[in-house]
Image 1 (cartoon, rainbow, N blue to C red):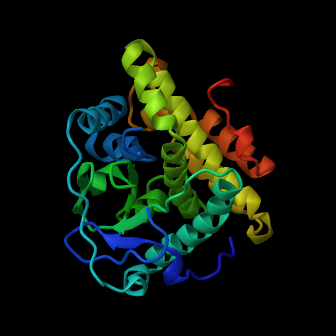
Image 2 (cartoon, rainbow, N blue to C red):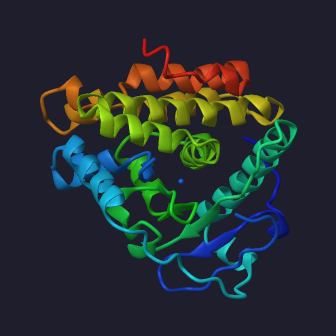
Length: 290
């Protein structure tokens, strides 16, 4: 995908591992929205992916938010150019901001940019500890998208999800959770989960699939920048992180009742729906789970 280089004035970037951060421009939240927490848990640590995600969600709901990392005058350009992956993430963030902010403005809905926070190995988020094993995640408490860029090597080598569009999909999915937060959908879902615990996982699946669809909408609205093969890269990544595929790859029995992110087929379907339509209104995963 041919994204232009980020403008430091148009993004909010920081560190989550003790370094500084720069939060210029626009300003600034569903448990920690996480694209791949089940991936690393299942393939590296051999834990049950459903249980691992559930643990993080419970910690998020039961604990008061930690203080968000404080901002300093560190140059965003330095943070975004530490490696090729961080540059891609910042380019994606700039494009995502430029795509979603006008939509909120047109709808007369308040918009706040998320903060992209990098860390290495371990760090601290407004939701508590950040660890590489979690994979990229969104923290609603500080509206932060947290990424340890070494994850992208695992995405490539362990899952075979190669290409820049697969990596852009990761950032765009977490951004999708930010959109849900700004719309208040996260609090509605949490309330529904508390009222009907037996439906908690099913509701979480719908949240994740909608974030996939929102990621696709961003790409669909920028289809003039899409290269041949990008669609396949995205769908391969979406398929690789379906609950059923992760469980099979971990040598575990597939248990639909413990799904939290959706099957490979569902994730591919909703990402493709977003790309094909470029219309956020097409992302109503709460009425169609087929």
